[in-house]
View 1 (tube, rainbow, N blue to C red):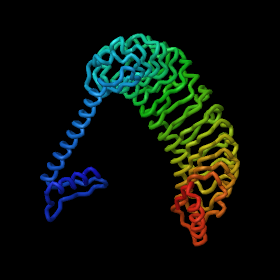
View 2 (cartoon, helix red, strand yellow):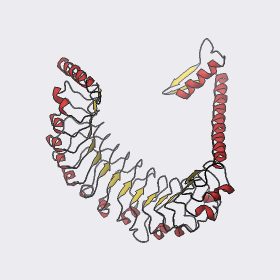
View 3 (cartoon, rainbow, N blue to C red):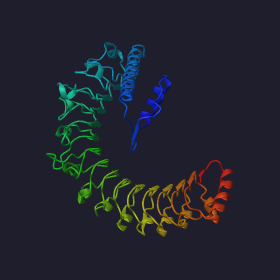
Length: 430
């Protein structure tokens, strides 16, 4: 909608005028012209705008290539992305100390042997590698390789020669499972398979025991792929933006999991195995359909960060205060009407977001959180606030706006505004 308005303003600025009876049809956020004359003008403006953006991008790319010729030959990082190259310029061989090379968005068929000498990071994204036979050379130094958006359904030849490789990104390709060849990379610790059409039943020939980080974002998953449970050393698992309705009890096969992210799925309940992840430090459960958190959460003694926002929670377990290491707790956009008394036992808590809930009274146990730095209790149904909230001496952010305060509450707000005006180190939003 905003683009259409900007185009209309540009049209007027060019000296054109609208007819006395403007022909606009509004449908939701979209504005349509019913006059073909104006439709054609807008289409022409858009075409010119796209052409101008492309011209500027080409000019910036050309300037980058030109600048690379004058760089010191001891340069460690070189960006030659989106230059429509089918081979590397000859002067790249002269960079004897090159560690990081970005050649994404080209059409490279090979890299010169000398370019590999000291490389530690190589970005070959969007080089159409799936259309021709790219072959990797032996490297004892390459640690990070990015092969995103190449139309790959299998790994290029020679990848097993990258014995030092620790991170491999294969996002935006056509893999149905974790490629078996990665088992030949003894140092590999991280794989990104996001935006691939992964098959739920796909398994590995044998467990992959060294992999620690796996990203499976936007893979249209409705169940967790079977090969995930063959990664016993996994410490970080991301499955954001999928369509998962449940997490299986197979989570118990990942005993070393430190971070679990299932942001924006459709999960309505957590399995018992989730609450037994003794080493879990961060759980991102944003934008799901959770209505209840089990009291077994008290067993997650290592938990430091808990994201529960944008769910359907109407209460929390009474023993949530047992999470003694918890530092950040995000509960906004739920249906909470009160907090358990044990919240006051979260003495390591630094961030507490409770905005957009249904709290009718300020939870007094919050005043016991002496390490609290960030408190958001806006957009609730509070009528007043405690005047001694100022005793939370470490607060840096305090948001209390958009509550239906009564006369006494407004008086407290006025007093707090005066107090925090004398303490500008605190952002007080009321």
